[in-house]
Length: 169
Image (cartoon, rainbow, N blue to C red; front, side, top):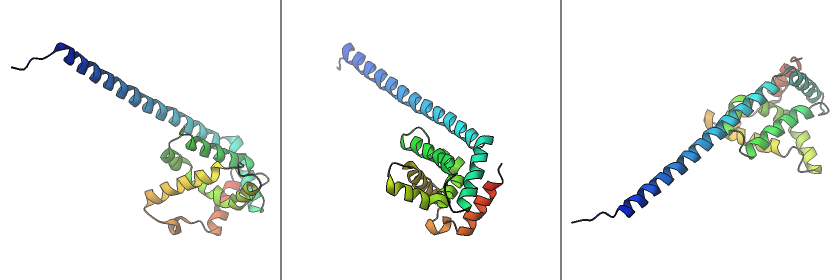
């Protein structure tokens, strides 16, 4: 006959209770982190579409069309911030891709040589923009099931994008 020790049953029940509690804390933490990320991304979306930022995007596009970066820093700083938040885990990569890929990709290609030039002098300048672009491109290729050649932007597409942005103000 098997005898059951009540201490063993209590120990097992306690262990199971602790494991369930740990799982619940982890699950709740993930939900909370995601909810905070959604709140942050919605605030960033509101900021990106605000009147002030629309004017900054218009000025940035005008500068880039004229072959310089003088008025593009506010927009580039915006994408730098998003890249930083992704790198630190504050934003979900796929959510950022869903909301900002079009603009991040076009501004990256519009300002890439200027960004790289600035980074040669100081590698910390706009360090998160290339990171943001590479992360979003990986998601774009995965979602569209295509390679680089299918998503490369032509000079004409970039100019069309910049001309669209100049009409924002």
